[in-house]
Image (tube, rainbow, N blue to C red; front, side):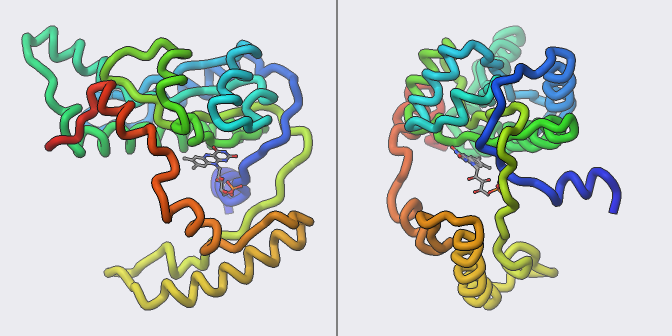
Length: 246
Ligand SMILES: Cc1cc2nc3c(=O)[nH]c(=O)nc-3n(C[C@H](O)[C@H](O)[C@H](O)COP(=O)(O)O)c2cc1C
């Protein structure tokens, strides 16, 4: 096992941070690493807004439903699907951008955001920092748009809090590998036994770490996925120009 594999396989989301700032030269390297990530058709439609100001982090913590680690971690990055950047490029050619009206535009730009997020995670952790991705900025995307002054054709997809860890997290077990890796074709018959085994495993894990509020994977997933848990995403995305008509 090499150092990169060790780092990847030791992943955990951290939710306890010291107030110590991240030195600028380290933050610059982390962001430059994500800037080098591959992008669909080299369109480079990701933008990152860096937030260090404590009042603004507190506001984002409120937007996310009061997640304390968002206010406590010294740096919060917001990853934006940025089709405004490409719109300006098309304007230069006298062309009118249409891609924001398609599901393809949403998939391509959010996949690129995901690659940038993964790169930020690895880069930050390589400097001994802890991270936690924050999807809950989509609880109230308009509030994020207002706070960050995001223009039309942009959407705040996900955030990431980072900083030096106070109380290290434990590593959360995963669904069995059979539910993740499919050889040659999708193997649906493996799913139910994998989920049954993981429900037991995760419940056991919550007990081990003393979390009395911990629930099984299927219960947690049913709680979230039996409704549209961030209902403001679609109308706000449409208002920003992402209509998904085509
Ligand atoms: C896109 C994305 C959004 C997430 N949003 C949040 C969030 O809003 N708040 C939070 O505490 N954790 C969030 N997480 C962290 C997940 O809860 C975490 O990755 C998952 O429970 C597995 O735990 P682990 O990362 O410690 O292995 C998010 C993770 C991802 C990848």
